Image 1: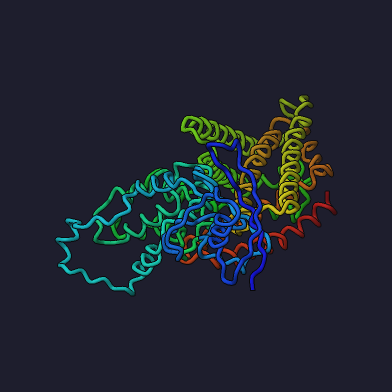
Image 2: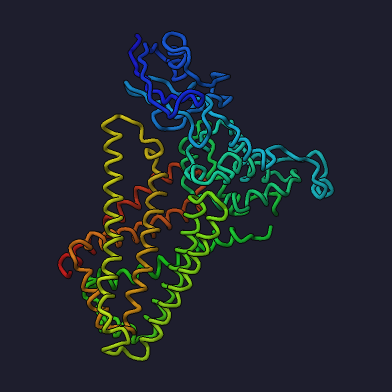
Length: 239
Length: 279
């Protein structure tokens, strides 16, 4: 049985609009419809100019992150049946708007890139001290923290929900710091600048422990926990 | 890895916070629970400061609270001032303010050890009382207007059915309240150091200033001050728990925040009773 749902969408086209405005659409929502399905329904049947981004439709790519009733989430994973009759949809915060709900992720990935978000192997001291292949004990406490941190899908939800990012664009942000921890906690990694940057002026010590990043993360990652471990020195490459 | 300046500042903020909680607990009990603030006259302070323990206690509180507040305000500047030059200038002003007020507070405490006189060199400068009253009044007006504006914004959004964004997240409230109470306490501390400076300079005017605490317009501010100090302290303990003893920090954060709010309200009630009946 289908029900009617009203979408209030924060729309903005920088090339035409002076400021953002709310546009209202009512759709017929079928059972198990997600917010993304609702947006497609509007795009196909009511307004072909609506802008939004998506890719996998399975909660894995993070492309469709937006604010749903004020809270960051993935449009493909939030079902309309769990929301009220009127649903407010806004683009992510702290990012330039390309059009409507599609944001320019450049500032987010610029911060991400700064911490070298990739594994750098062949640590000379580690290679000398440890014969290959390395045996990693999965029950090791630090390894379990790393396991959780690597589930990040880089959707930008935490970046949008972080009030520190909103006030200080130089701050690395929860996602970059979470990634920095995941790599710094790997004893095989030889990248030392990453730790210095993560603990520098715009790094982990600039986090105010608000915890919005943990509340909104659609992948169940706790960036704040990773930041706390960074601050407490629970990192392999710093020891 | 060698600790850097920002790391040391972060650790100092955490450790000084714990020490301030211990000291401010004693200060709050004496000044807001055992006595009404308006009855803490110059003779009351003289009797108290005749014991070196209380002088050392209050000086340690002044030192720790000012430096803790300075670092807290530095964080506020870092989060709100976009330009590097603006940050540096703001940090410089804050540091000068903290150093000046630490000096004023220290001189006040040390000078009183020579015995409180009935008159000081500023005893005839009667303009000081209305000026300090005006400063406290301005702080009160800003606070009342800010609270009214917040209520209007939330009511408007509720009427227009607009989303409240991150204000639906407990962490946002815990952080915003921590920051608002911290800023309020810091500026109150500066005004408080100024009125303490009257003890050696104009004890007669000090008593007139303290009496103004019973002013009905300022009474809600006194309740708010006690509330702010208790909340800020309890939320500081909550941050310690989350940052050093909890790994998940999600469910625990909601539960501990609720505890902080409830305990704050419970602890502030006796001080309201003392204020209303003794003020």
